[in-house]
Image (cartoon, rainbow, N blue to C red; front, side, top):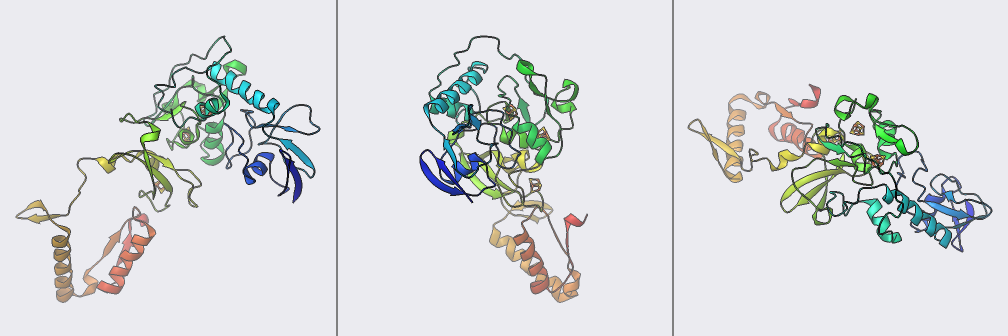
Length: 348
Ligand code: SF4
Ligand code: SF4
Ligand code: SF4
């Protein structure tokens, strides 16, 4: 542990952590646009700057380790003015379309501009003017809204390990790009959407049919039902309709999803989806109640068991069920029906 003074208060913190982590551990919020606890510190946005006694220039708290006797000011007038100027610079080279931007209400640049009183960009000059990349089936990339925090690139390389995108060019011309600028559809992108999930602004956005505002959405934490990994996710629900999915931080997925969990949710609202049991009568399926369906199943199971014994059964279950459902399924076959003929589609 080390002794550190933050904003005039004494604290003891772990000696291996950064100033940003130390401040957060004692409840002091420091703004950042490029930091993600799962990624290596990047110190790109510089919004997390703090004053450190003995240092001439302001220091990025996300990349600076604490030391014993350190004295830090996180919200001094000099720090606040610098942060305000950084936001001003970012917003001066950003489209002025917050009113219609899909990210409004969930945009960190918007939130910080509100917090630091930046109403508009005051620097006049050239602005980015790139074509929007619509080529990916599931998401769009608008380089004009990009603030070059680098999170998408780092998530793609450090966590997703696909390296589909990178930062190219220098200075004002720097942008997130694909090899030979051929667009996302021609890149090695596997459409996991993990870059979209970390983008703090509206540069990377999911494609969706519905017009939604983030503040009107209900979030429902659940487990992805597409495979046995069991990734944690949040369904974004508007009224009675699921209109999006965002990754949640579960032990199995570390805040990541694959393309199926992230984007293949429209089946939930598909009109062809079965909502009641169907029983075939006279060669045609007819809607039935659950009581009717269970009675039919029990009668059939008992009849077959009586005529041919339990080994006449085989149970085939699915990786799309949870571990708990699969456990119950094998229990039903082993303990109730009396056979070990149980298998699972994951063995395909
Ligand atoms: S969708 Fe996934 S693979 Fe494609 S660029 Fe984003 S993080 Fe990389
Ligand atoms: S696209 Fe988004 S996540 Fe990627 S660098 Fe730009 S602002 Fe950051
Ligand atoms: S998000 Fe992908 S990996 Fe995760 S549980 Fe769903 S299908 Fe499996």
